[in-house]
Length: 114
Length: 112
Image 1 (cartoon, rainbow over the protein chains, first blue to last red):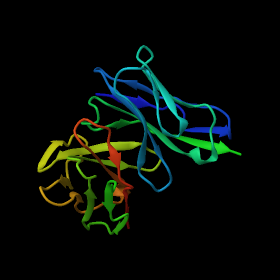
Image 2: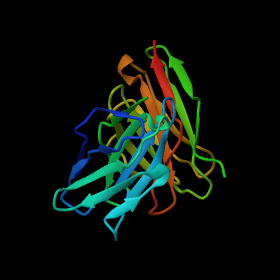
Image 3: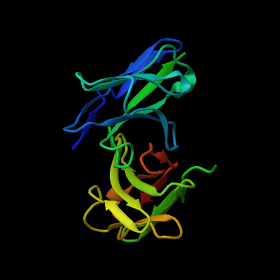
């Protein structure tokens, strides 16, 4: 079984500042890792995924994440945030490349302050 | 290329009634997943289906909940004799074989 921990329920950041959203996971098998973003009253949109290969993964909207196997982490980063990045961000793991059900963290609400 | 379509977007039911939530996967996607999101919580996996088969229902409550994905038509999540605790947002996702899941906009179920 897998589990995901997002330590920060809310992260306030000033516009154009950098941000890091933390995600740690636990699993007894190799996992595949995902970050999704959810805007109000909408479904989840895939930001990026780690399946294999390079541990630094680039996604949409200027986001990137780094897979660290020794620390079992997959933190999400953006060098300069915009007001439009205000949303809920979810980290998720799967034992398969998406063929299995995803296990989600509780989410981090990113609040961009002008 | 249309995304994952869920309907209705909002559904109101009284306690004891039945709720039917529909999901049409993206074209070419044969895998369907249902998740439930409670307030202030992440999404919880409920069930994974392929055409006419339930692959994994480890997240489904043992009673009142059922899901199907028939050969023709959308996938249906059915909740019988709804209770207040069933109020939540229900999301459907689809994927082709071994690819990330794409999510619909959800059905918000309210129980009066």
